[in-house]
Image 1 (cartoon, rainbow, N blue to C red):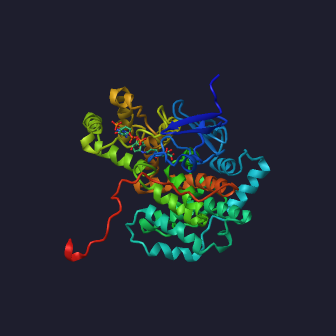
Image 2: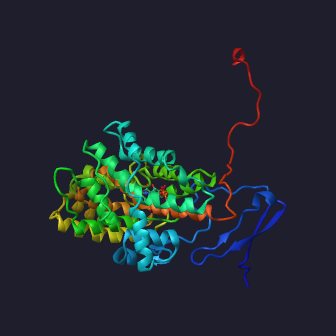
Image 3: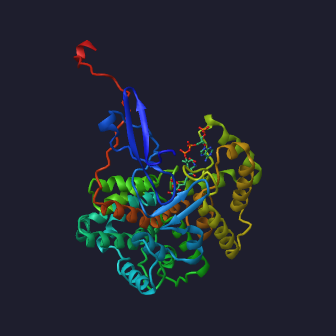
Length: 430
Ligand code: SDX
């Protein structure tokens, strides 16, 4: 009977027996924590493709099945039956709330939607044409200069307040960044509105006329937020965990996560994807771009395709595609040329041997940009909306890590390939 409790590693004159840790679902994990101490060797995994950096009970992904579970609940069921605030409660506390718990949580979030009035001044230090992500990194990091009563990571109550503050204030800060970039006045949160409705209101309302939130757009925005809420140990979440492992305050950790999310290989892909669709422009130009994507020397990739974990359809893309059809029909733009290009690009790519062999499927960013554009958001606001949504995931993962009594500072090692020891030479002799 094969030993399923330990892995044996033999190299040189050494043989190590490494424990195998069993998950509730997913692959077994070889525990290599004693490898360097006992074997005097490191493992090598620069992109962390085969590395479990932590244990977590929050989100599970099966890349082959295309499955995504938040605390065990399938994303498809949550997207169709839940709300973003309820998903925030689930991710933060581990269980779906009762009606009373949801009411209390909603009230606590609503009580924190405004930002300190002095923070308005931060925005005025940015150029009007600043990317909203630059503003968000700065303003969220600056929250630690204002909210001194929720910086002590060792106080569970302060951790809780910091979590509620960020879930509540990120939409306000993102909306303020948008308003500042278009030269319109900031719009204060209206707590009678839903979480998603309030965000739409803060983005699109103006003082000179009433703004009525359209339920279908409110629902689509809420669904986009749910779909982006958490995603296991992705790059930005790993950034938040690593920053948090040093004891940095929660606002600084989330600002670090926002900075990482900004990259076009990660959360910046929704903006990059829409800009790519606009560059393609018409269906007849798709083959030219498919060819470029296959040409390694071009440096071009089909934005919105591929994923480190999903080697099947991203389950979020499927739900997003349904929303795209609904929103564009509602707005009377169902023959949106971008959506036509997106659908034809998806069809061609899914039939193409290159994409099939490399298991490159549309990911969450492929359709989200089309919905957000149809709603009237500029492409520069796509990643800030991703950041608003992912804040609860970052905070949940951060709380899980800080609450772990065995938690230590994250400090990877390296495969050193630089010069061996050598002596300094005087300038005159070089
Ligand atoms: C998100 O991690 C997460 O969970 C992230 C996220 C989340 O919710 O947090 O899901 C959100 O970031 C989604 C991904 C958004 N990014 C994009 O859409 C950008 C385009 N996609 C790629 O850059 C890429 O697919 C990644 C970054 C998403 C994944 O990169 P990997 O896993 O490191 O894969 P790779 O770069 O090693 O590529 C494998 C092969 C390569 O070819 P070979 O060298 O093996 O010949 O596939 C090719 C790549 O050239 N490839 C692509 C491609 N993506 C990968 N070729 C063309 N177009 C693409 N989009």
